[in-house]
Image 1 (spheres, rainbow, N blue to C red):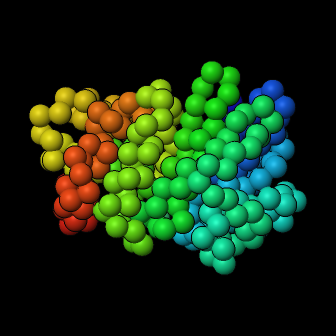
Image 2: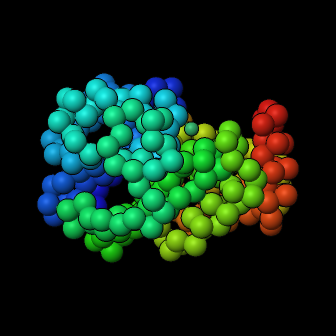
Length: 244
Ligand SMILES: [Zn+2]
């Protein structure tokens, strides 16, 4: 399994996921066509599908142009996002599973940020990765635009049940700000302090902070660590107005 990280727009990430055994690739969140097409061309990838995590324009704005340029006929998103994801041809549900080359792929429905948000869990070569869109960020979670704290709490619980070594690839580079909020919430959390130093070093070097791991999110993420939906909702409200 190989994952190319493609910075798009101001702070979005698209990904090119490849089964190295067969050379088949999928694009996760074609945010913007130019950088995605460049990344595909640079790596010489053969793209079978576009997988959208949710309908927001900064995750799907490149769907039509990328699908046309690469002659991709499969554009995936949740069944409830019908009419909201450009060029969508396949309408997935929680638990749907298939293969990309030799990699096993399965869908988790993770509403909260939007009601149709999904994660794609990919395993193979003794590794597992999850693409979480704007639901689970490194050390944070997305705003509750369409869902409730209860939905987000259940979705984060679902994601944290994945194997602790699972690599987490999220939709935005918000890590430093998220970790500053995390250290405000839990000033005594040493994992948060160490993660903030590491994230700052990576950003100073011009490197992305993705991927994280499920284990690290369980240790550092104040929304994953919220004991119930009420605490999650209160933290989400506090984060909306937090200025570090
Ligand atoms: Zn979004």
